[in-house]
Image 1 (spheres, one colour):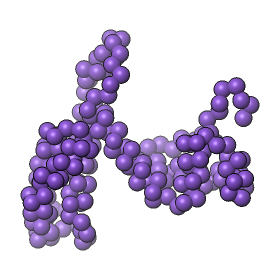
Image 2 (cartoon, helix red, strand yellow; image 1 turned 90 degrees about the vertical axis):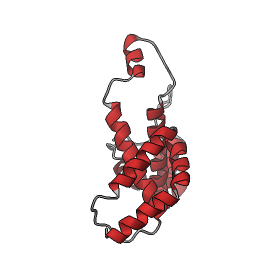
Image 3 (tube, one colour; image 1 turned 135 degrees about the vertical axis):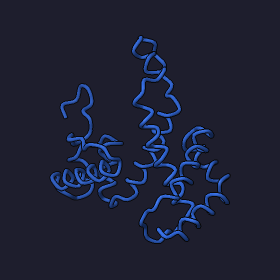
Length: 183
């Protein structure tokens, strides 16, 4: 990235700071964390990085800040939190802490984006199987495909989403069996 591009991004951050902080506060659930992350984003812009043209500086800045927040939340998760201590002592606290709630929002957003990026048929098969619990043979009949082709498309959709979410692929196919059913 050229010095001009970096300076343009820094200016964009400074001029749009309030809006960026508001959006990050909504995503992260913490105004303090949003401010800290934007500060780190500003500092990161001074590091030399090779990039192509940036179409939307605000989206680019939000992405940098979001990545910084995720790294920070993951790093903080390594330490023993109060809620972890309560669980260890047998004191149940069902409410997620702000860090876990923010990370869950990130994961939901990432999954939503991954689903949108899937080809329509793969997305339909994945949602029918995993969300609606429809058997693969029924999905195949609805789409006029063989069950094997539905399995292949489901496997591809799962692999794509796992890659996008940086997760391992779950090797189970079809809907979860309903208790008492023979399927």
